[in-house]
Image (cartoon, rainbow, N blue to C red; front, side, top):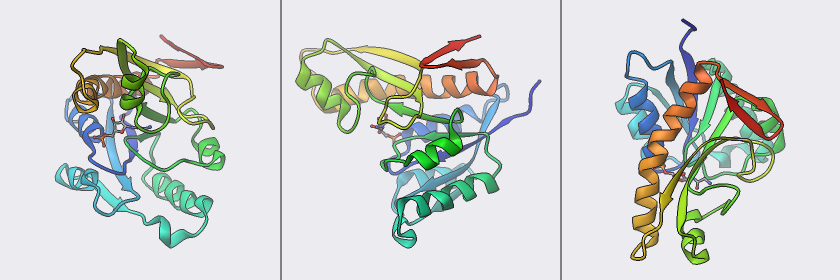
Length: 203
Ligand code: GAR
């Protein structure tokens, strides 16, 4: 069996996707463990969740580091110090520069609450409702230098109901997020993801 994959998570808020990854890591047959959680917000619930799970939780204040690349250099140092093999963005609300993305290329994943490439960026669920789609969903993807544009690993579809509000749709999408993010991390940890250009195949 291959060694356990060490995962670093970057999160800015509630941290429910982080929780899904923490919970998955408690299963004996799961091949990855979250070893460090970093937030750009001191009040992020994600930090409390990490602490409760006995995982190192760090607030790194962007204001302490001037330029974005200087902040990201500290992020990278921190993640390297914890020897992480995969970085998961889980509601991390900062745009990352190409410098950071290049350092972690192929080892950097994100979860987004839409069926990409539809509705990238902020308020994806509201964008989906405003557009009138009948199927929404969630996407796990590798991060490239664009906004929510990287190679797609897993997607899950969620039917839109006539009575949906942004909140009810977001809640149903979230259930799928919590299922596919740990699954994508498992596939990565098992070395089963192969990326060729935009396409990810699962072996
Ligand atoms: C999730 O719905 C995630 O997909 C979304 O933020 C939420 C974070 O929730 N991410 C994005 O919109 C990124 N573009 P969480 O903090 O409970 O995991």
